[in-house]
Length: 475
Image (cartoon, rainbow, N blue to C red; front, side):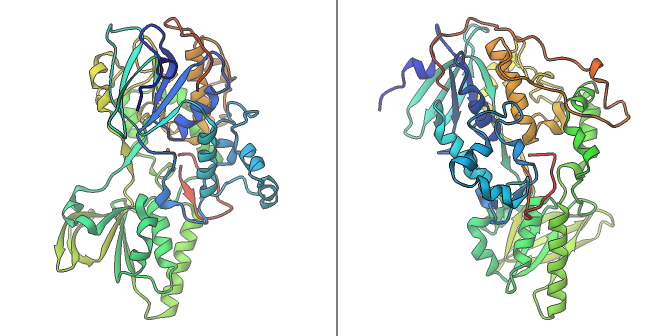
């Protein structure tokens, strides 16, 4: 195997214009918007072998909770050839999507669309594990070292570095002793048949993913007994109202950015129904499945337990013994189960490769990357962040519809011009959270912080199992 040419990787003297680490929907959207720009030489690295977003939860009837307009490009460039509508046209599905009369794509279709877009783009490098980032002179080009699946290391040089890494599954440490009896909800479909054949399954968590797993288990007429347990005080419905959706607007972001760090964190903690709840359609299906089981008589029982914390897990013959504590009463109880599905969400992926340049990054009091209003997290504005930013950018951070607008801003920094026009969103609520448009800050004038290289361009969703799902604010 030979090393790549500097046309792909850049060099210390002629770096790439942009290098992005991470190819989830936000990084892939950045690649789509960078593709037609003649003054952007770009590369995109990801450790995975290819794009495949949450394959363990691709239920056949699951839909996104955001409209198709929140695709990889449309909110920045409705004319892009990489749009969801163009994918429908290219694959012969546009008319059937029109007749279906729903803004909300099947999640399988969204994944297929993203894979289609990825297959059309140059500059995507899969199987690249980023090892470290350095800046030998403390300024100028960033040096990125990666290793591919064959163990070959490669150096990349870039004027602008973009952190596009996403999130990884998390589960309570108390489950560690349970070993193979535990799986994360993100891996559910790979184990679906085995779980349906068990006598008893315990599902942890009360978000949409956990609820989808519960629906799948309950609607099987021969399915297992199910315990559904959450630490939350109750099983929250997702908040979908238009006034709440305005919390994803640029105007609300301007308000949120002006608050102290501890207050921003407190606001995020106080709004679980905005990003960790369950769709109304899914709740209806769960309640209907519970009614059918009760009416059938003799069917495997189901228990829903809120405000209940897992304390310990231990092997118990061929099964698993779980110990619980009521958060409200302090009382303990024990249950025995055959399998545990942890629908306990995701946390930001660690970024050890940024440690060598940590002193050059903008960090908050908790040591987290702290990008400015325009997504820049270094003193000279050449490191940009697409993810990991709920603490600085509220619900706009995971919202798929905001991804294209964020990428347009990043490309403005990279090119020194405005390749895509951005706009303000509506904010009709009468509160300090919605300043007038005349008082809202405008994007800074793009500028190049280092001489650019020459050459031609080389360039986080919730969903519901209903074809008429309402829109959701987070990805």
